[in-house]
Length: 189
Image 1 (cartoon, rainbow, N blue to C red):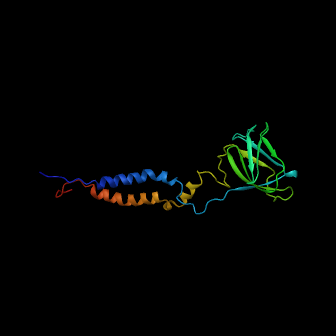
Image 2 (cartoon, one colour):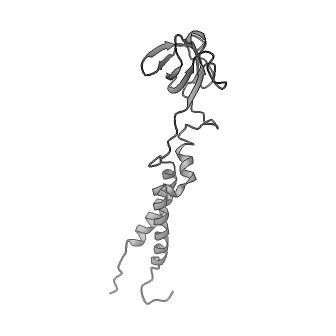
Image 3 (cartoon, helix red, strand yellow):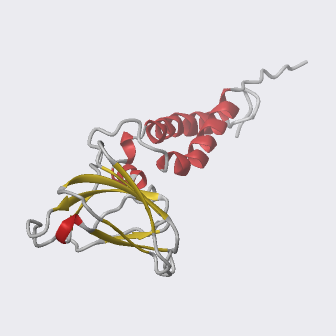
């Protein structure tokens, strides 16, 4: 009686090749393992008004004012907590030119406040916060959508999962094709 020896290597190779094809898009969107050049936080320049007054406004995504919303401001040594008025406006008095962190509407922004008359020409006259701002701007992309995915797409072979998938496919497909001949030895094709 003829006994056929079954090898699981071709099946394993086919499964590995299919897995590398299926999981490749997910690994492309994965965060990079190391980020040698992290993007520095974006700092906004804002001109203070006379008497160190900072003006700002909070809006939702549709552009509607956010009334009675907490705004927190700190420079590392001191902290201020204020609330917006019915139109979403707020102001803080007695500030000096320095770097501050402002937390409002679910986001934190670093701002460099300039004393009245000392701000660069590009400085804004106040702060505008948009609640849950997930809009991706062309000038600055802080979103995960265009952050790590775009960097990974520029250099896909730097992702170890993609490289491993390509190597597994390059090995598995020829092995599977070679071993797919199920005819018993000694028979003609």
